[in-house]
Amino acid sequence: MSGRLRVDWPTFWGAVFFLLIGGGFAIFGGYQVLTTHAFMRAAEETGAVVLENPESCDDDGCTWWPTFRLTAPDGTERRMRTRFGASNYGWSEGAEVTVLTNPAYGYVRIPGAGNLYLLGGAFFALGMLPVVIAVWLMARVVFSREGGAE
Image (cartoon, rainbow, N blue to C red; front, side):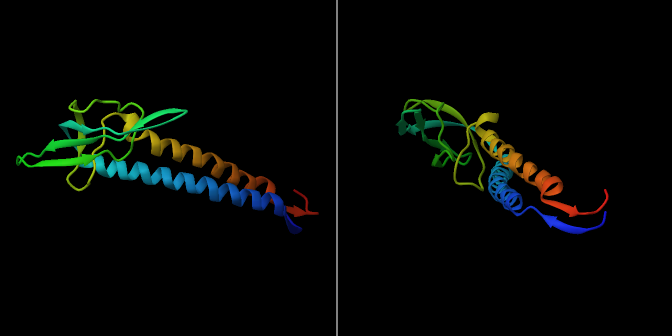
């Protein structure tokens, strides 16, 4: 290839926009997956009692943010909330629930792949789509040679 390098600037800036937005989503999703993985490395299942379960409702439905009472192996009681609210946490006060705890973290998680890895995985996948499109645009469309034989 010879000739002068030509840059399609509007497409270049569109690709940069895709990289920034998609990269932000992918970084957020990757961070969520990594923090969940770190939590799960030393997590233990334990029984807990729902102390309160406030709800937040709008036109799309309700989300609950439960607070639990847990009894540690040494007999001390702790009061902990979930890290994220969810639409399937509609427990009544006093209900007994299995939760995941990790002594290094100040919250509990609810067992199940949808509650643990779905949020981070979805953000990562949704973020990687525009990143792949941006890389393809940069490689195939943005940069080309003028007047050279290919």
